[in-house]
Amino acid sequence: MRYRVRPECAELNEQLVREVFEELDAVRPGGFTYQSMVLADGVTFLHVVDGDTAGLGELPAFQRFAWTVGERCDDPPEQTTARVVGRFEGRTS
Image (cartoon, rainbow, N blue to C red; front, side, top):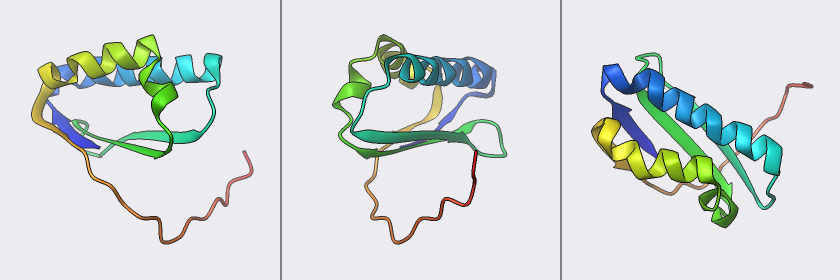
């Protein structure tokens, strides 16, 4: 998913995303991977999910984020699917 938030909402959006990851770390649901990134412009966010996301949608922090994301956006969330061609995990930590 990709979307662009209004500049005055970027910090709040990032905090809500961080809260989702804090809850994921605490609950440790299985069956999917999830990454979130903000582009260099500071207002365009990307979320990449691989696998069954049912556990993600049940998290209160994710619900808080998802229910209000549209209110923070200049460009609404656009969800697309992709096929992984390759992946390299070169980090050891």
